Image (cartoon, rainbow, N blue to C red; front, side, top):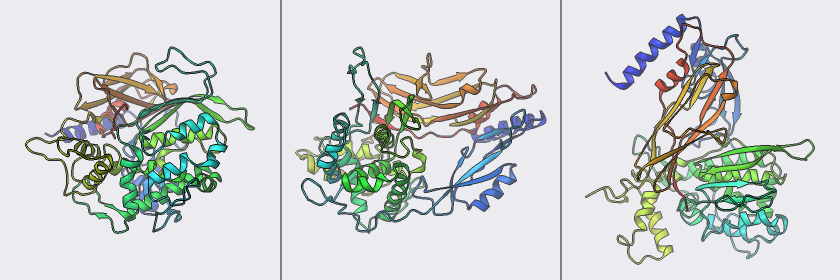
Length: 511
């Protein structure tokens, strides 16, 4: 009997026992790609109630008018609380709305460099236009401009693992590195792939080539086209306009380059940002803002950047929801595979950087060689006599179900499995961005939970070579009431584990 069959049988037995005990539990069905009406029927059939909301879409793959995610997520087991709370079985279907055409062909040139008067023809040009813009330099406080200046194209690599502290009146000389007294501190680490010349280069080339098309040719590869990437760009631009507010258009003129950088990194789209240590500002009315931001990946970097800009009061929503944006990490992140040849982007970058394989390449020649391999499924590092890329990536293999709804008093266990480690692996768990004391293994168990245990849990695994793998967020929701005595105390957690579910892993190395 296969593991999947065993899971289904055990789950059926547990659900039967649970139902006989007098409680009600439903699992959110897979309604992705359905119309709102069809999703409503599917939810009604399992005893759930539909609500809808319109967003611009978190994926370039979902057509307009179709459901692309649910709240709570698909696969979540919803348990009726005791006493019953109105709306406990309501599921919100998020329906994709068509974006307005922020950009159309030809995408490049996209504005000009304000200092030099030259066209912006790619993301590297956009970064250079941003960091040399005289108007922007005159408007932004020096400490914030120091952060922006790190986007310089030749050296910019900001989408690894980073920390930003927005309010630090006393400093911390014991911190490594020391934190100076002042309003802003940041420790930024790259992922060992230059942002503008390497990672954003792939996106820029596709946006500039209307005939670009790599058809789907593997079960896990959905194909990559100019149209798909341009649509994703427009989706995210529409969402940025909502989150940034009236300054979105203004920034496009006064600080040409910023829109391109925000959109490009959001299309790479990996990572997350955890905001913590909140305080109320002296605005009228006061705004609840974070003092500390820990982020990873390109998506996390942009969330952090918006929070930093939000601290100056120019962003309408400084803490946006990253899932509202069109992101394509499966194609463009370090661990993604742009051409679907089975080799990650980092693997192919690692290969073309090997002087034993390509001796004498200048940096610009190496970049062109990387693009040649990364966007051509017919070219990849060799598999024989051994797979060239085997073992270079420490990664997350799997994690337990990332979404749990549980009653007060029960127990849950979160777990992950990693692979490709160099040496021993250490684990660091956080709850709503704060370290969990004593949690240092590949599993985390919480007994006798209360409503205060509701929140987001994340585990970061690090091998001895300082390579890191980060889980997707576990969203644990604790509801009032307890399970009937006849039901197992840990049923909710066990059901979540039986349902399984893979997590999206990010591989990065501190730069």
